[in-house]
Length: 143
View: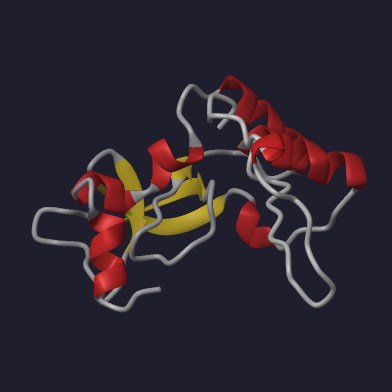
């Protein structure tokens, strides 16, 4: 995210008339680590789903997926209980988990700081299917 091209506000007309709306994306340059550090600094309470806990999962394409009617496990994929955490909370049909013991905000921050994989690189199952998987989901009415 930090390598994204800058938003060049000076190139665009920033004026707006009364009644017009302006779209602003203040978090677009934040990394996963930035978000977690902000949560820690502001002492924001989070539901347990964001932290590591034992779940029934199966492995596919190098990530742990939750069993469900939508697609798994397939023949040869075995369900097992593992201590995992979801680095992004999304639909279980396209979000993978990672092995983790990070059950507190400080442990999550330590884990992310040591990781060399981005949140999406580690856990977006759709990206393993095809480069256009998200576009395919849009066409199918997922969004």
